[in-house]
Length: 616
Ligand code: F6R
View 1: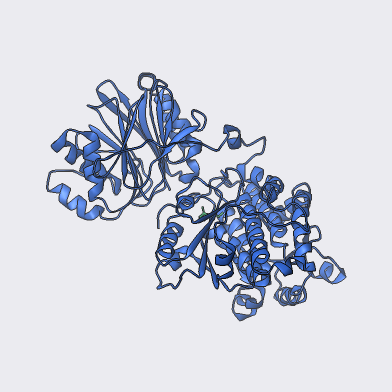
View 2: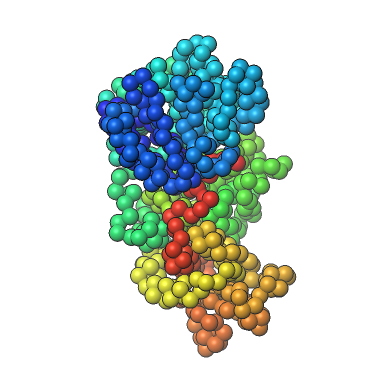
């Protein structure tokens, strides 16, 4: 949450900062600001609302912008204080000589504030960040060394932070520090960059240093000096950044979300490539570091994740228990971390995260590592904090996902879980890989990309249904078995981008309470694949129909009965129940997209959300 950009070099800093912030908008977008270093002065510009507002402010300040070749910028997702201009970053000390931008939460800000007020510090905003500006300035007044002042200050700060700091008397440097919030330093020629995430700087450089927790760096245009909190000089480990700037283009689609939904057939191909070649071949998962003996000793699996990644984990439970026969628990990281949980060396913990930066999941992973569990991370960001904590890493290769609503990363997570399950079966029960069901699942996985294309290339019925139902204020999504998580994920997609109240229920639970809400104002969307629970879901649909609810069916099977029962039917190509979550979800993503688009919502940047949730 919140995005940070910094630049020092020879380019117009305002342009580098604005462009960088635009690629970090997914991290928050309620206000933004920049501080530009000019001769002997730091100029601050802020604006509430979307980044365009700041762009307009800067357009009127071209005189200053033309002169400045270093600065820091911030895009905010409010944690402390309303998203106003006053609370927007950068924040300053009393005299305005020192400026700070911050991502994270300062947990002991109240204590620090009380202490600093005794020294005459005056606070103008409601943010925790302003405390850091005063604290670093206070330390600077004692040592006159910006790097030492920042180091001394962060030693007193509890919580999570990535900071960029500038002082008007030291125009040749920017100081950065990090703990539990991502920060990278982009390495250029005669210029250097700072960012919360790669997209902000990838247009300028493909070389970067990942700052680690409890490290501080002094960044000048032609040098970078990194130390630990004791002041010991550390090595600059320069790494190659894995993205191409083209990945950030909309490629002609109206929204990133639509582009990313359409990319899912290729994402599926990428995930399978090199790992599953034909229905009889072995699964190759080189990144799983457990030996066959260790894999055979796994007595239990626990999957920890949040949001959409949690829903992928729920599908994972079904297939891991069905095929690998290993008891599997799935839990939201935010709940997991506040319980006395049990795990040991015979527990495999799977952390799933698109961003690899979700604070709750990171905390959970750290907890289980201490208890001796092997940690396998499934993430779209092999460069993330979570990936760095992993014992085994399963990168999902979905490519950069810009839209806040996760779509293609979900597809990649699902398929990675199917591959992992089949891999476990192969190791723990080699004989069973010849089973008809396993061979046919592999065959279906190979055919899946073409089936996804069949859905994304034929959206007419989905668009019409979206238009027809866009005026409803509430929805219920139901399914049973392996598609229950699909109902949860479909409802999540709809509510997050259209703000329509949508809840996913296990179809069998409907009659235990939710059915009380049903009438003609509450459409019910049922996901029902021909398989063992089809008839049961049909009965639940009958019950809903009897309460006058409008019924939408998402299915691979139509007969006279379903034609009579459903008001609208959205079909998917034929597929087994086992793999159907990977196809049904594409229909639900498109339905949510077209409803939100029809309602004129800000699809890629829904209100109150951020793509990378780096606070607990
Ligand atoms: C929903 C969505 C969120 C994320 C959740 C976890 O579309 O994107 O629910 O899935 O915030 O994020 P990651 O997967 O990055 O850990």
